[in-house]
Length: 263
Image (cartoon, rainbow, N blue to C red; front, side, top):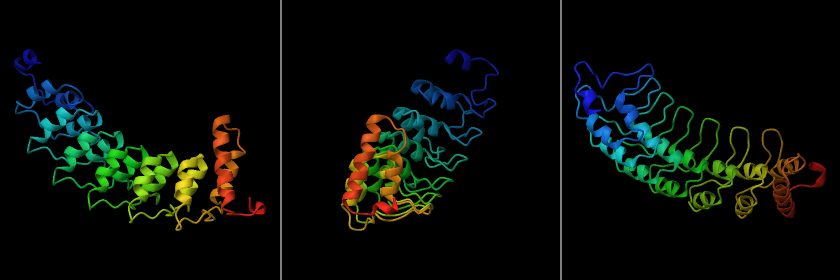
């Protein structure tokens, strides 16, 4: 790097066809190279590629805490700059579960911890979908973060966690007084519906423990959580999955949520 940069006519800030200059690639893994490049006037530490992703975004997505810290020392770097999909660095850190990067970004006043992307997905939305309990707790510790905030499909963070069977995240969310445990999405599917559909017995048990949860609530197609689980149980699933779904069906039936004629 030093030899090349010493040659006349070499421009370290020149982007390739994707709009990515040397710093963008260095930010993926090379802390020492990042420091060298930032000494050059031609290098813009906040320059996005054609998809709007900056070197900081790339460092966050690759989990390189050291590079994140180096870039954030530069005044030109916007820690909350969104890409063309509306996703800021905190969104990526939350999705991949990089807790230290999340903590660093949350320490910056410019960062909005509840900013949705173009599809309405917030950092909390991504953290709940992927089951990152520590990140979920950090985000919920911020008063600005709305645990009921819906994406463009009307899906709440709790539905994400229920659908993926992340029991720890479901427990954290239900521990907050603000969370609606029976919030339907635009298709009328509730967290219980999602958990029943995927055969997540533990999540179903947790949700049925809440008085606000209506186990008979139909979605827009008229399907209840039990009818959804029963339908899943009739499909050629792998044996272990079929058994799990059958236990969910039995659990829902024990609540006498429907009569056999409605299945």
